[in-house]
Amino acid sequence: MTFRATILTLYPEMFPGHLAVSLAGKALERGQWSLDTVQIRDFAQDRHRTVDDTPAGGGAGMVLKPDILAKAIDKVSEGDNRPRLLMSPRGKPLTQEKVRELAAGDGVVIVCGRFEGVDQRVIDARNLEEVSIGDYVLSGGEPAALTLLDAVVRILPGVMGNALSGTHESFENGLLEHPQYTRPQVFEGLEIPAVLTSGNHAAIEKWRLEEARKLTAERRPDLLPNKAK
Ligand code: SAM
Image (cartoon, rainbow, N blue to C red):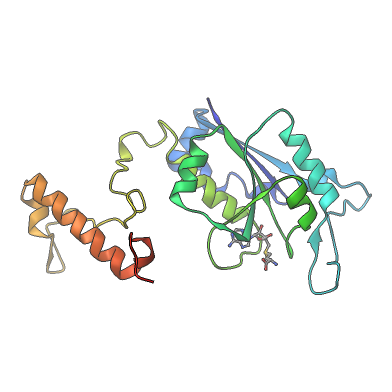
């Protein structure tokens, strides 16, 4: 079944963005996944096509109105039970595990926030799962949605073919990936580690695992099991 992504946004022109090129773009052309955008503003009811209003309780910025967004969500969710995500810095951090879970499903509906965010009532009433791509604040959910889709699409069956070796990739086994090297044998006086050109596959595996563990302990000790906190 084709993985279907539907994006609710005020800036549909930001899609497919970088997903139109390279392997994701070819897969999109081949119909291995599909992408639809929905302009939230099309669901506005006044002649100014208003989608936002001032925050209740005061404060800076504007908030996306719940009634408009609910209509847009209902329209795209008719007869479908794809997960509904809201890109949000308050969400659960996106992980490779979550990416795998999404890639195994039929697709996803993604709401892209703007301004100060989205009225809480539509998040609750439409069961939106908030997902963050990191501890920083973007100006809108679109780059976050593109990032999430990039990670999902590359692991869809047949998208990367042999290019996806998978097994050693960062996060696949709870470790960051070991360092990689390629020709030339000597670069600015620096040699490829001898073990990698030894032809001894067991030794290469052992070296890669040790390097992956070292790197993970150094940079991301939080990923290691039995982490001392
Ligand atoms: N006032 C919000 C807060 O402090 O949590 C930030 C709103 S941000 C300026 C506008 C929109 O960008 C958000 O509604 C969300 O859709 C998106 N966004 C910003 N940072 C994000 C992140 N780290 N991950 C996912 N989406 C993000």
